[in-house]
Image 1 (tube, helix red, strand yellow):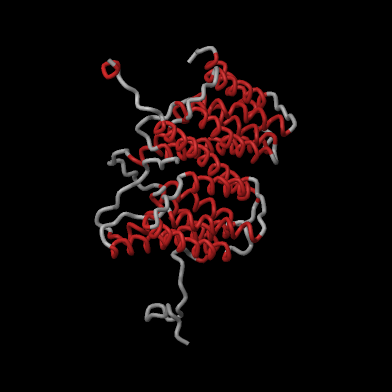
Image 2: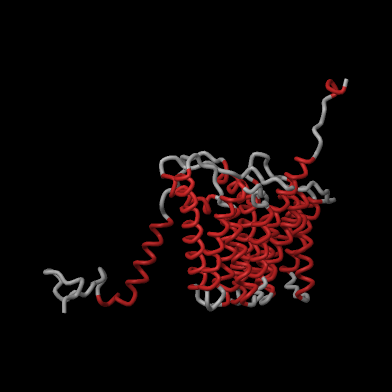
Length: 201
Length: 220
């Protein structure tokens, strides 16, 4: 079992639970990377609405899973999963690989579910939890819709297409490095504790 | 019919520009430019402490910029790509960060790679010479060459990760910094459209090769 990297961040004081939830996707580098990658994939399609709707619906399911998962004894989201999704989306953008409708929708459903699952919180009361999760869903929706819309609005010029490819390669590169960091952390956790000579004696 | 902009002082309801009619066609562009200048001319908020995600990103972003050997090689990739034209102009800046990340992963995982500094110095020499000599090999040769050197650069970045940095934002920072160096090389390489640009760009290749030689023989 690969443990997650210690990337958890605290809430921002003074802005309320709802806004903390809204800002959660933007404060998580991995979630931001997935959102950017999926937005670039969607922005290159002529019809961007279906994948975005699929993402939004799936993210609700993911958030629900994050609520029920601990009670059913299910594990937290594996840290490699968002990383793999971002890398896959980055490859699609960098190589300009056109996806068929079913594959595209599957990608966005998987992305929405994983990011919703990754938005789980540990609050004190159910009302606070509701506000945090509602805010997280709103944050995911606003971020993805905006990024995808801006990507779709870009003129279809050669240098802009090149720029998209370059952005896709950046996402792939960042995903590979994140994968390496995660595996290194797992390896250091699995290593047996080193005993000092005094302890051995 | 009542116009929403109608007032006593503006009975026609038309929204007027602050510029006279003679500049009407240019007023929108001028206003947009001034607005953008105000946006970018704001004083940077320097009263902050670097830590957490911000510190990791800044560390990663500035890491390639503190090494002249990294800078010249990455600019050379963009220069050579612009020199070779399509598809190399986008293929090389796409391949380099991706393969560099593999090299970075090797460095992070502690996989040893021999002669890292020599490989980095050679990248400046070889890529600089490619531009100086206006060499146009097949695209796959250029891609393989760039990929090989990218592994050395990535490995160096991966092993030099500061322990206090947030690894995710550090990696995003140095990937973006690398990409921006490529773009600056491409921008410089596009000067070859002009007659005087070709010797200038090739001269830059010569300078890059000399810098690479300097690092190879430890002149710097």
